[in-house]
Length: 243
Length: 238
Image (cartoon, rainbow over all chains, first blue to last red; front, side, top):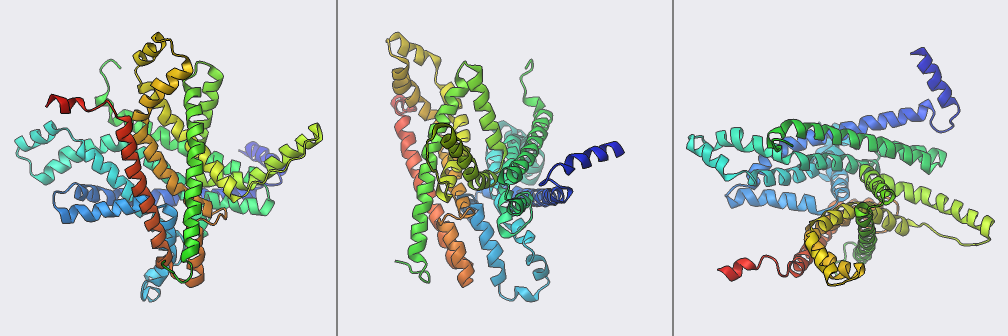
């Protein structure tokens, strides 16, 4: 450990830009990015399940609002949504007097709200597509067993739909990681924010941005391999027998 | 004309900038995509490697990071290159990487990678018998590409291209971050000056939705054109 430490210090001592100090910025940035992406994905996922079910409802007044929501959030840039929420929350009447203001005046939470609403819209459409693709036979079999609609949803439709949605959802996770870079625009010190700070300090665009690009690349591959593994585990029953 | 506290005309100009960036980077992306797809399908290992490296790297890094890298680093890189040209060959040129160039080139490069994947899949979907038939007619490779491969490939590629275009359109909003006065940047400036985010951001969002809806219609028309000869058999049978 000590040897490693000595080696690391020596490595850093030759380098004007990547000192322990700047690496600390990148590390904090990594923490911010992961927190932001992870939280928005989890909350977005929880929102998306009921929304996807509502999106497939036969009742127009249930279906249409959800469709409108996904259409607007998927049709406009995330940056606009972020600006709207970041600058917009201030103008909600009386919000500055409530306890919410303590949370909302930090840029992190408006960004979290924007990202969550955005990913929930995409995930809703992914799940909606997966639910729609449920084989008729499975539904008929559930009906033949006398299952109620709720039970059928819980035991038959959703489990198989989640599996079908897995590859598309993996793409959405990577998309969200990349989209989170715009958090730096509203003063959040995420990975990109750290890179911009280091760039501005040393005027070294290649070092600052190539380094952060490499970190993002590693994160992307980590997500990619995680989803490959999950697909292999959860979709094993769909593989050809001798494949 | 809607005035929007005097920002109306500027927002309109911004909308034109957004469209310009989107269309120019789409053209670049299409060219790069076709090149990438043919490199990936070529038998030469070097082309294959380069294309794979390109698509993997580009799709693993956020668009904003690439844009910042090109915008802030591009000028330094280009200057080094032109300096070298000057000292070695006595050629004196100056290339200016402004926000517009950086934006278009970055978005074009990013979506070139995505388009490459779309085109590759679409080329593979064209039956090899079709190409063999073209050869049997004595067509040159170029003629086969133009008359047989391309029109049939487009049928398979269009849904993917349409999706890529929608994502590309939304990505153009990022050029506002590096300082290009597209409609997002002007709306953000107006918001900061007047403290009325909803007044400016919502019209901009509506313009994006409008462009998206119009392009959806155009893609549907194109799809109909390239589907000629397919999917009509059922009508005749009935």
